[in-house]
Image 1 (cartoon, rainbow, N blue to C red):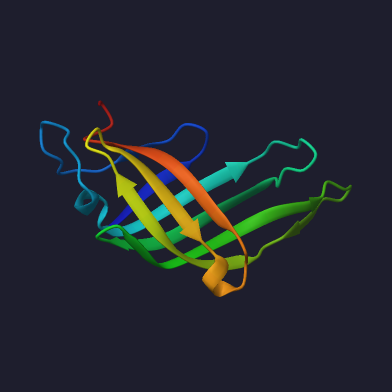
Image 2 (cartoon, helix red, strand yellow):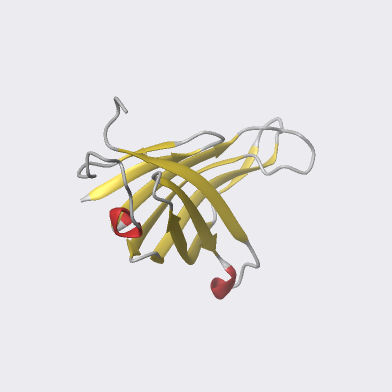
Length: 127
């Protein structure tokens, strides 16, 4: 089963099956995930882009990660977009309060980049 999360300034991850106590462990993040992201800020030096990342987590290790992005290179007119695909590995750290930190490491695949995201696991969307 694929799970989904949104990467943004504030993100909530919805996952079924957590204990009623909301005590989370790294194994709660095991499985296949899809993350959607957007950075639409056009402040100089930023990287306006949208994208989707697919990856597998097993016991805190991220494997088989792939991101497909649309990056605004020149606002135009007409706007110029590129669509690179990047592969990554990484790690997931989960705290007992169900907050989690994901680190995507693209450096093993030729890009000297690491991205870190903080998300919150939730029992359901009413939590």
